[in-house]
Amino acid sequence: MARKFFVGGNWKCNGTTEEVKKIVTKLNEAEVPSEDVVEVVVSPPFVFLTLVKSLLRSDFHVAAQNCWVRKGGAFTGEVSAEMLVNLNIPWVVIGHSERRALLNESNEFVGDKVAYALSQGLKVIACIGETLEQRESGSTMTVVAAQTKAIADKVTNWENVVLAYEPVWAIGTGKVATPAQAQEVHCELRKWLHDNVGAGVAASTRIIYGGSVNGANCKELAAQPDVDGFLVGGASLKPEFIDIIKAAT
Ligand code: G3H
Image (cartoon, rainbow, N blue to C red; front, side, top):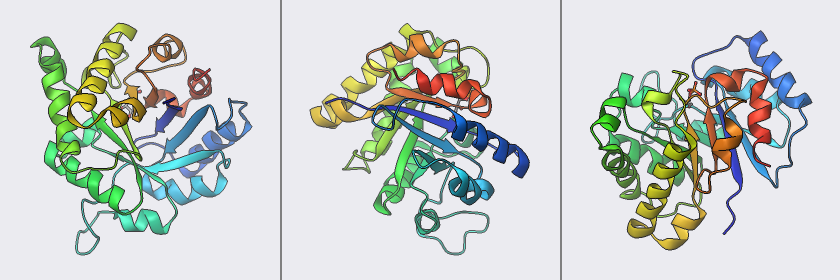
């Protein structure tokens, strides 16, 4: 089954109203392959979600960068999946390594969040990835398999899940994984899905790569058979994000 190329732009904790409007204007002016060829989703901070959604071209979509693990209520500072649905925000990023590391989000907590967001009708970009120490000790696959298993334990329908493999050592460092390194892990992840979830899910789930993707390295990464797109951080705030979207063709 053909997997549609997916390009996500994670704006992280960046931007002012003026900067956000400028980025959206650039995106709206860009000539990119059609929605049949590439799915583009940008993820501004919560406070800019509705602004971006109201200004953004209709063939691009928006994602929140997080949501609460269960139904909303007395959880000061959190944003619930129900609220995102209420605002017609279709996507949410869950389990980003920055939240895993800085906010101690465990594999199990991430699995619960993914399942709850899906149950409310959101589509999920679920992030996994190993640290440099874990890679150097040869445990990359053990780590990403455990992260994926915690999601698989809670999720039965993978139709609305995109799995983002983001090696922590490549995030924001300029040290992008080589195409061979990315392909190796993506291929192993697909095998893991095949053996532990099912052949159909393995064949249809998009596994995207994140970590120092830019306009110069995206083409070679995109050419790998198991790389189905990207989750882009820093470069998603720059004009080269358009070149990354074009890597779909
Ligand atoms: O979510 C995106 C990743 O953290 C990658 O960030 O492209 O700035 O390395 P980066």
